Amino acid sequence: MYNTIETPNDATLLLDLEGLHVVKVERGDDGYRAVHVLTSDDTARACPTCGAFSVTVKDRKITRPRDLCAGGRPFTLLWHKVRWSCRESLCPRKSFTEQISQVAAGMRTTARLRGACGRAIADGGRTVAQAARDHRLSWPIAMRELRRYAAEVLPEEPEPTPVIGIDEIRRGRPRWEQNPDTGKYVLVADRWHVGFTDIAGGQGLLGQVEGRVSTTVATWLNARPQAWRMAVTHVAIDMCQTFRCAVRAALPHAVIVVDHFHLVQLANSKLAELRRRLTWKMRDRRGRAGDPEYDHRRLLRSNREDLTDDHLAVLERDLNRIGTYGRHILAGWHAKEKLRHLLALARTNPPRSVIAHRLHAFYAWCADHAYLPELITLAESVASWWAEIEAFLLTGISNAKSEGTNRVIKLEARCAYGFRNPINQRLRSRCATTRGSRNRSVPA
Ligand SMILES: [Zn+2]
Image 1: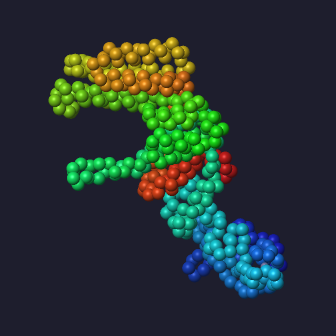
Image 2: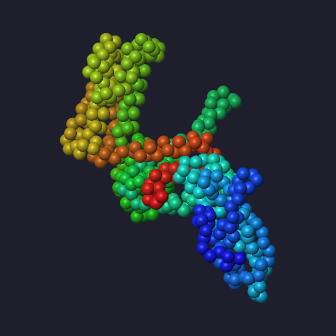
Image 3: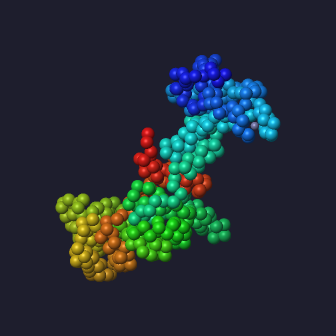
């Protein structure tokens, strides 16, 4: 049989399955193409136990391994296989069937079909169920191929990077249950993941841990090699005491940075708190349309540079018209803008004197309005995080990449209609968030 195969014909080249030779392609009664192939790899004659080449045919049979689609449509591969007898007297094996690198003995699918399925999930954004359907495989096989592919392409240890970001993300929805005795609802499940993102380089999500307590974060950091930990110079976090403790314990040499995003968010929430409290105080009810401070709540949230002079004039006129409480709300707005004015120094290479001047202006404003507890809380938060905020003003490092990573993780979870298994979720999240950086270096 082997001497009939000399050079690969066109159909063999088109199929491109190493070790197999196409002898005939026909249209079957079911409308699918049937591709008849023979083994062209001479080493398939070698006994897998003793290695001796066999010349004695025991019998012939046809197997139908599933392969990738050709021309966008599936086809039936009919492999006319030989079962050889091993005549070596010392060999315990009496017979063996042919196998090639793409189809090992006993396999009913080609390695490239399974590989494509794993890649479709990890890099193609496909769900496991959909990739399994597309590749005519079962869900467990598709999942196994994802794990295999991920183990191949995801580095076991992240590359050293000078800046990392730490951020938390909720896993699924919190679950509440009613206590039958008190009738009150209590939180029974609220699961979180904490992610570590490469901020300086393009490695994406470096790892995730379950839970959001200080020790789990520190454990992950401590598990990295010494060289990797020493390479980290800056860590971006949001204003979370847990992360600050963990980083100080695990990476004592690294500078912690808190960016402007969460600070401005805090300032805005304090301003809204102040507005709601004063509304209750003066009207004895919550705000509603027709109340100037309620009507202008969006203007209050706006940044000064996004407001026209007319908008600002209207805001000031209407709030001043309310009287003392209106002026207090206006004072809250000015406190937020003074904090933003300070934060705007980031990435401008500011001299320390300018930073000190603007910080003082913000503190002085809050101190002048010390009868507003919301401003005092805001100023205290800034004071307790000042080292980290100053590091942001001097370096301009932000945790935006971590937030971007979280967006991708959420998208992946929504596409999968949620995850039951947190280990699978972490694997899928890691594949999704490193997809871009991995595929840049892989040739098409
Ligand atoms: Zn043998």
